[in-house]
Image (cartoon, rainbow, N blue to C red; front, side, top):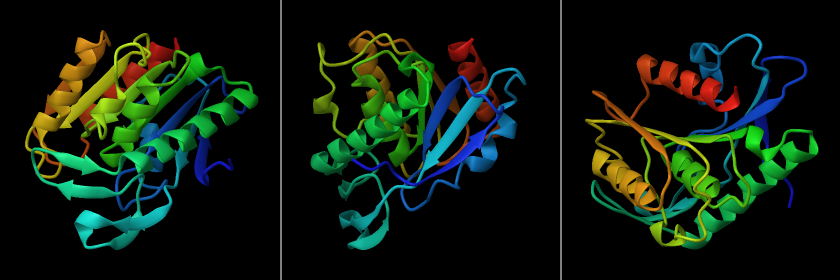
Length: 220
């Protein structure tokens, strides 16, 4: 499988860790590339940031409009999502291919963090908790589990720490969806740091700083 096209940013010439960061529906890999300086990471923490571009596809809940997406959304409202499970699985395989590519570049899985916002966070969640090896961490922002039935005891890798955050006034992905993901994963034994901020479907600077602290903690 060929890997996705990506934007890459390296904080040092010889990175010893990688962060694979997935954008939301309708965006692309450039969407979060500018966030790296705001994370306020230690200068000696050499990281390769990878911001892949999702393929474009028709989205059913948007009247079939074609846009960059990690999977089709069949139904959409504040309290639920009906995702195309086959599409979720296909994107998980694409992220596994990026992880393997980083392994081949000398970065062990336990030095790789998966991060994502909204639909990208949904894939980061799913790919991260189902990965066969421990990852350094998962960052799940304003998101949910798109196919909860895929995450079962015995299949999940409970050793990977998770940072999950949500806007308390999110009109796109209701905070209840984030809480449901948190509760399911905690019930399976995952360690989750859960935070909310008084914002809508976005990120804020205190959240970005908290993400930077989580990344530093995971990679130290």
